[in-house]
Image 1 (cartoon, rainbow over the protein chains, first blue to last red):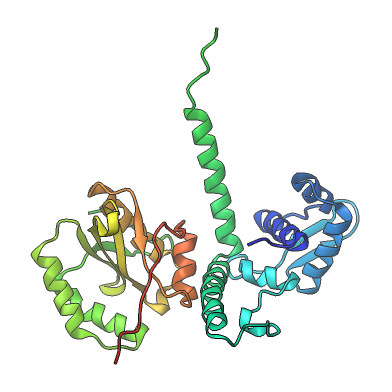
Image 2 (cartoon, rainbow over the protein chains, first blue to last red; image 1 turned 180 degrees about the vertical axis):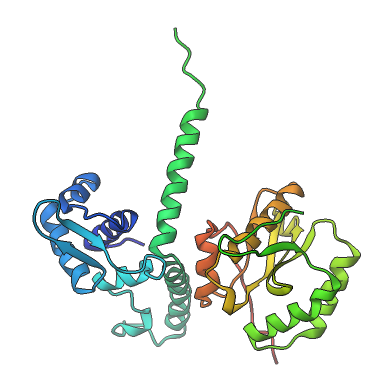
Length: 152
Length: 154
């Protein structure tokens, strides 16, 4: 499963803002950290703003901050602001859909979609932040446990 | 047995006793709306007969059972090395979002570690967002097994 660029940028930005709830974070900082276009990110942030998930502040020390509830905002909610992940049965009918093989194929694809949807709707931004911290701590621990390279 | 205390109030985590059974049954029925007294009695008897690798833990606040966690060590199901299986878990709706679920899971995790296992595993309804989100928040991810089923009614 691949997400569109705008969706990924929105998720990165929301996570950055939610990780620092008491400060305004500049779009340039987020763009720089993730190596993404500032213009593209600005459009994404406008969408997040319209959805009342982030709030912008202009001027010196301005930026964006997350104003949703990180424990209640799921990955699925943010993704759906930028792209449709409608069930396969919701789209236009394809040739062969009504054949027996087509019906079974639809069922198998639905199974995958249900799992993806359940996964995305069960992970909140807060959980993502916890996972990110665990990942960072794990990477740090692994780095510390690396045996020293022998000096020749 | 490991015990824990929820941050915001005095909640004790301990092994369930026979006297807790009606409270566990009542809490489960209140949450699931499905009475299953016989199931619980049978489960409690089996767990009392052989406690090794099995635990029913309760969270208690002012002599009231406000949550429970049930698990056992299961091994070699389709080649799976021993793991800690969680198959019952709930917190009284009035007592949620106070860290009680985390305390229960921590205590169960400590119990399983003491049994020598290093993996926690559970199976949840994929549309039960509440419990799914809870376990996700505690670090559980999809594992290498997939649940399959078939309707065999005639």
